[in-house]
Amino acid sequence: MPTPTRAAVVESGGAPFTLSEVVLDEPGPHEALVRMVATGLCHTDLGVASGALPFPLPGVLGHEGAGVVEAVGSAVTAVAPGDHVVLSFTSCGDCRNCRAGHPAYCATWLPMNLIGGRRADGTSTITRDGEPLGGHFFGQSSFAERALADERSLVKVDPDVPLASIAPLGCGVQTGVGAVWNVLRPVTGSSVVVLGTGAVGLSAVMAAALTPATTVIAVDKVGQRLSLAKELGATHTVDAGTADAGAAIADITGGQGADGVVETTGSVAVLRQGVDALAARGTLVVVGAPPFGTEVSLDVNGLLAGKRIVGLTLGDSETRTAIPALVRLVKDGRLPLHRLIGTYRFTEIDQAVRDMSAGKTVKPVLTF
Image 1 (cartoon, rainbow, N blue to C red):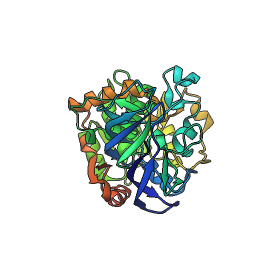
Image 2: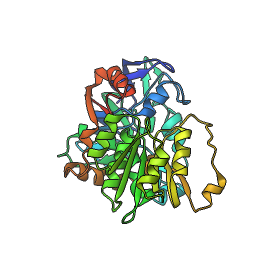
Image 3: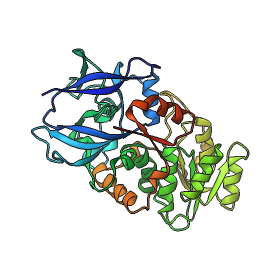
């Protein structure tokens, strides 16, 4: 049966989130109905809400959900009613990259997660007054009291861990962690630089602190964020508002440059600084996403020292392996994610947006 629920709807590009009564379609064979307990707010949500990406509006966003399964479709085997789940991105499960354990590079990733607003068959998951809304955002659209989620978006987690404490694992945290663990893979004595200390950057700092890297450098212009980075495992911080970041990185690394850099800001000027700061055979991971079509200028001769530039989506994570491991680290206190989170009631979503935009809260989590 269809399920009525309340959702935060964006009516048009640049409009605020408005609470509205909507109806969810009944679960398809590979879908589940989830009662939301918490959902993180991510810069990707704000980018789509601003109209910067071609997602169909009016629509329901939200892609860092956590909740309890209430009902499942006829072919669902991964979860059952009553299971606690973290909601992440969806994927087809059958293309070359999905079969190889890289679902973040699924052949259908872009329409299925970011810009399609519909199921793969073109049908809508959410309606209002009989009219379809943009939905199926990352296979979930979790800015709602209930969400109709793809089975491949769902990851069963330890029910003893509060869901509000792990909702951000669905996107931002696994992205920052995966940049370090899945791409840079620091070896003993290596150096890691994180450019930008938002939720993704601070997650990368925490991840680097759990590796054999002995130098972890956080770069930002916000002193409070840099102090937090130091508390979360950065060995050095650089205030890019008062110092030349490249010169500071060179000084800290004894002139060698950084073995690994994680660029989270989406600024092409910062990306260029990161490339220039690499050591020979160093790797820069591009995580921050500027507007579509943005280009960056690089010194080609500077790349000939074996430097690598790698783009990254969602940490290149296989979610059903990565997310339970991260949940265990949170539970054991080894991944202090609570230091990033500020909680808001679902009805306070606009305040959460303002606080995130103003830098007052690193990772807002809406609770239901």
